Image 1 (cartoon, rainbow over the protein chains, first blue to last red):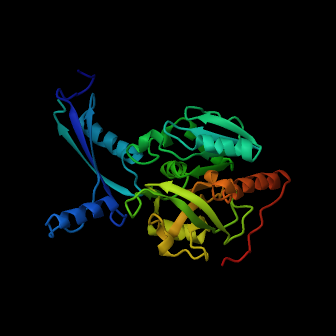
Image 2 (cartoon, rainbow over the protein chains, first blue to last red):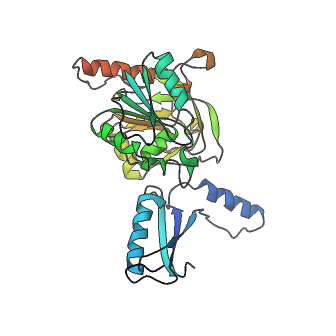
Image 3 (cartoon, rainbow over the protein chains, first blue to last red):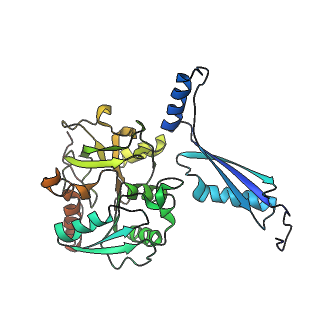
Length: 94
Length: 245
């Protein structure tokens, strides 16, 4: 490895969580909720099922990584009409 | 006229649409590959049904970045006709050429049946030959056909007459009982503000022969022929005043 700038030797890992926007119908979440109730977990309230995406990043520092992954989420990984996303950048993609 | 039908990896209704163009309508059908950047002068582009890119990530999310979509967007911006059927509708929404999005059916099941849709406006190229309130029997077959958008978007669609088709019963009432997928306001199809881009979940290309149940889908395609003829004759579109049911 070894890019031109301040590259993390171990690389960075972006963790992106995409969830259905509040108010958007989530049939999967509903089905999971009903199954959990049937299994004897009546304490379960609303369930929302989303997606988890891991991205290993190269040759980018943490500050740039955040804005780059933000752009990736807005352009492709999440659809802002129906989904929200959260992202987290951690060290050590390995 | 010339119909362009885009094949994405995973499209599976492209051949049906080409057959309609060539053998049923007697027009020219142009095969467009998703990597094409030239629409070869077609009058109308159809994004067909199927499972482009395996529906990975979200239905239509990957296909919208295909090279051909830049040309489709330019065609639409220039006032050209664009029709998205089922997965094509999903792609147009992902591309931002149509408002809203399509999510998993409320009943969690894939639905495959003939439904009745009510034509809500004749002011699109695809409904130009229909009456407002006319009922069409057209098949649906999808797992992610629940149309959603935020309240403001739905209100704007209703105010601008951009809802083109609504699921209805045989009496023409858009009641919840006949909503096959949970779509807001029973919406089955919408158009853009310019009215030249239309997307719908039902498959008009599968309803072109009484032998297989219905030929109501033909009305959409014949509408485009008539609309283009009217345009070429220098005609103007007058507001429709036929009252709904």
